[in-house]
Structures are given as C-alpha cells and as structure tokens.
Image (cartoon, rainbow, N blue to C red; front, side):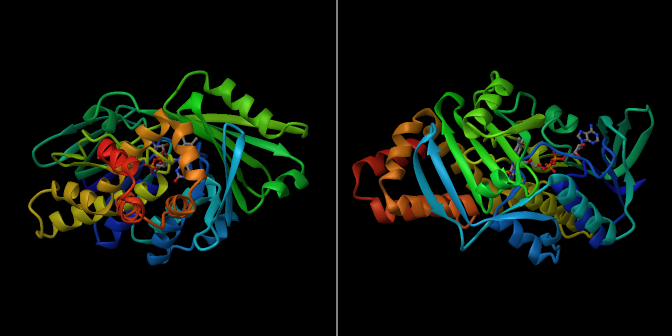
Length: 385
Ligand SMILES: Cc1cc2nc3c(=O)[nH]c(=O)nc-3n(C[C@H](O)[C@H](O)[C@H](O)COP(=O)(O)OP(=O)(O)OC[C@H]3O[C@@H](n4cnc5c(N)ncnc54)[C@H](O)[C@@H]3O)c2cc1C
C-alpha cells in the first residue's frame, strides 16, 4: 500500500510525484508507455513554464532545441503581423526529451516506484483508500490518487464524462537545413477561420513541427497536409509522421477532485482554449495536487477539496477568461484579427499572452484602462464577461 498512486508520467504526473516524494511520502507512478516516449505536441514552452522549472532548479536548457525570439502571425496566410518575443522567448523542446528530464527529476526526489508499460483500467474509491486495477488484472492500493493520464485518462473521463472540446494534430516534417534555418528562432502562426483555431510552424533544429488545432475537429489530417503544403510551397519536404490528440480545453463545469482522487493536467481539462497551451497548467496542477495531499497527510488539511481553491487562486480564473475570449475570437476571427492588426497596444498584449507574461484577467484590466472609452471594448467585455 502506497501513500499515493499517480497515473501518467507526463508533466502533470511527474510534477505531482516529485512534489510528494519531496515530502517524504511513498509514491507509485504508473504509465502505459515505456520511457522515453513521444507525445504529440508542439513542444512550445512559454516563459512562465521555463521560469517555474527554474524556481524548482530543474534545468530544461539541455533539452532546448531552439528559442523563439519573434513570431509571425497570419490571418489565413495573409496580413502578417510581427510580434517580438525577445523579453520572454518561447523555448522549443522535444516532448520525448522534456518528459524524460522531468521523470529523471522525479526519480531523484526519493524512492519512486515506477511502473512502465502498465495501463490503469479502472479505479475504485473506498472510504480509506483507492484501489487501482491494472490492465493485467492485478490491483494496487494507495491512500490517495493523482490522475494525470492526459486527455484520455480513464479516471478523468469517468469523473468528467464528455468529449474534449478541441483536437490538435502535428506533423514531423523533414526538410533541408536551409529551409529549417528560415524558420529558426521564430514561431509562425496562421489563424484559420474554417478550423476555429490556428496552424503553427515550430523549428526543432533537425526538423519542423507543423500542426493545426482548434474547435473544428473534422478532416484534420487532410487539413494538416494542406497547411504543410501551403506553408512550404515550392520547397522539398517529407512528412515523416502525423500524430494527434484531443485538446481538453478548460470547461467551467469541470470537477477537479472526488473523494481521495485529484485530477491534474489534461485529465483535469486544464488547456488554454485560446492558445492550446497545456504544459504550464499541467506542471502547476501537478505540483498543487502533490502539495495538497502532503498537507492532508500531515494533518494540516482535513480533505483534498482544498485543491480546488488552490487551482482557483493560481490558474482557473485565467483559464476561465481564456475560454470566454477564445469562443468570441474563434467565432469572429477576421474581425478580431483586424482589430489587433491595427492596434500596437493590443499587439503588445498578444506578445505577453504568447510568452505567458500576463494573465487574461490582467489583460482585461490593461485593455479596459487603455481603451475603456471605446464602446466596442466595453461591449466586448460585457459579452465575454
Ligand atoms: C498536437 C498538440 C500540440 C500541443 N502543443 C503544445 C505546446 O506547444 N505547448 C503547450 O504548452 N502545450 C501544447 N499542447 C498541450 C500539451 O501537450 C498537454 O497539455 C500536456 O502534455 C499535458 O500534460 P499531462 O501530463 O497532463 O498529460 P500527458 O503529457 O498527455 O501525459 C499523460 C501520460 O499518461 C499516460 N497514460 C494515459 N492513459 C493511461 C492509463 N490508462 N494508464 C497509465 N498511463 C496512462 C500516457 O502514456 C502519458 O504518458 C499540445 C497538445 C497537442 C495535442
């Protein structure tokens, strides 16, 4: 019997496991994959995620493949807008190496029992423990459970049934060194009205990561191939691999804990609906889940329900705003794109969001302070608020 079982060794699960071990607790970390494993992702690590890792003395620099100091945003392949990111670059990592680095960090925090190639099939919550059934039919017992098994986590989907709001697919594109160089040190985004989302090109040193994601989940592979072909018109390239995944955008009615189980990361639907960013929220929620359980076990808290308050104080109100703004933006993308394109102040705010330098609440305040006399701005916030 372990103090805590953690499902999933992605950013949320390793952060939870490392935090719990740091408090001297016994932890079993279960993942259906063998590590190092790949994960479909753009691997864009915004500045606030890098800073959080710095605070925990986790050195992400060895796995950095590029560092974007600018971004070019298009609206349907036209009307480019340049956004400088020098003050807070977005780091590009391979998820295989990044997740392996976090797992190594967790293993260094204490005596972690790691079960790889082991899928959890179901969970039973008893008054004083959680029984975790594995796909080979055996069972484990733990005092608490952190369910961080990503978008398809069986525990996450049983506590919050229903489909993820979005989907993203990404292609690993091999091409010549000079074409990769053309995209080096910058991010390219293309707002796509038909997708209710956007496409991206992220440089990864030896290849390009080109992907699309949004609310419209139909024909994504075909759309992705079209996006790659338009992005690299006239260039020689080869799509080595396409892989996709649901994007569990934040939804206001989500439950984050139940009895002795806490959900973290994608399993708790903690993805920013405007940008599709989820790594930072996985790291923060994993850490908060670990801290909450440690405080229950040392008698400081009487139940894990405090986790919800911690999430609220740290990330939920931000995600709540991103969800509202995303719905408005992706329902009327051309209108809002044109608004930002014609306004330097709004471009500055967009830069802060891309880098994680501001929250959506502060953004709302800053925009109201700067442009509050504008009736359109007032209507916008009335609508989104
Ligand atoms: C195409 C795409 C591009 C993205 N790009 C970005 C980006 O550039 N920047 C960003 O910040 N976010 C991005 N995201 C979102 C980001 O990938 C996720 O938010 C993040 O990986 C969530 O981390 P996690 O630890 O919650 O889950 P995951 O990283 O998904 O880890 C979950 C783990 O649980 C394991 N697991 C699942 N089910 C079981 C089971 N039944 N039993 C045992 N183990 C199980 C899996 O093997 C996996 O290792 C992107 C997402 C997609 C789909």
